[in-house]
Image 1 (cartoon, rainbow, N blue to C red):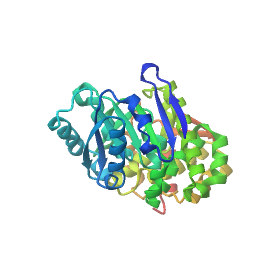
Image 2: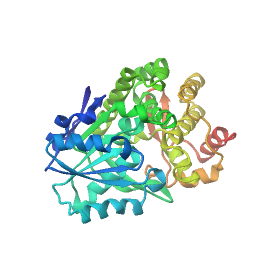
Image 3: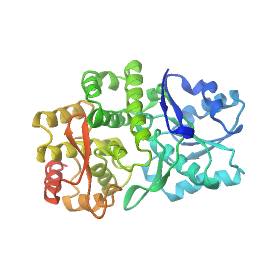
Length: 362
């Protein structure tokens, strides 16, 4: 087991990464406010891991009930969120109740948002079961639901008490979900960790083969990178925005196609390729480095060409992005591999040229 601490004063918490952690009641019990837990999961993950987690909670002296939601990004909305509140209210959950998110990023985001708002805030624990959730969405306290006009536009910052990333749960992850999660791992190499990027180029095959040593290392290093950024900028006033490399383009893909048509990591991968192309147009990224980004994404089985929504629709959706300031579209771009910046330097014409180039075969 490896561990990372997210240092946020009295809201600090540990991230544990390793195989078999679902059974570690000793890791969970110090973070429960009382003996009452409500596990929020979905109808895909529940048959695989809910009984096992509930046994561990009983071993920690807790009583657990479950709220099982439908699976998928299409259900990350007010209607499904309200099912969590229905379960909490009918079960008479109080402020001492700990919510536990068992699943991927959708479950983690919605459980965290419910925890942030139920009775004005209750504690929660993240138990992510996808690569994407283990390296990104479970860490840092961003919680949200989607709106038809924009992804993750309604939410709150609310830090978990604990992140328990059991890498053995990735053995049941569908291949497409595994590959999508690698996009967020690659992101860390591109934005701030060039040495990690080199490691990924050498070890992407091991990650795709679900080698436990490689996965544990990649997840821990990704979490360490994210923790450092969250500690410096918890509520995304500056540096934390760098974690959104490829996301402005990617969110436009998800919104434009309809949530769930492309997985989040797939959209981010195509978005990172667009960011690399735009950085190259600005003279910030060498052609060879842009080609390295393309090759690594392709080797990970990720898309490097976006769907052909039309440049106008892309820009329309991108203008709903949270990084827009005073009507000005700002993007995360690359001054070099491992060196991301938040910039409004790209003109509308350059952005549209990149979209046309990177989506011309979509």
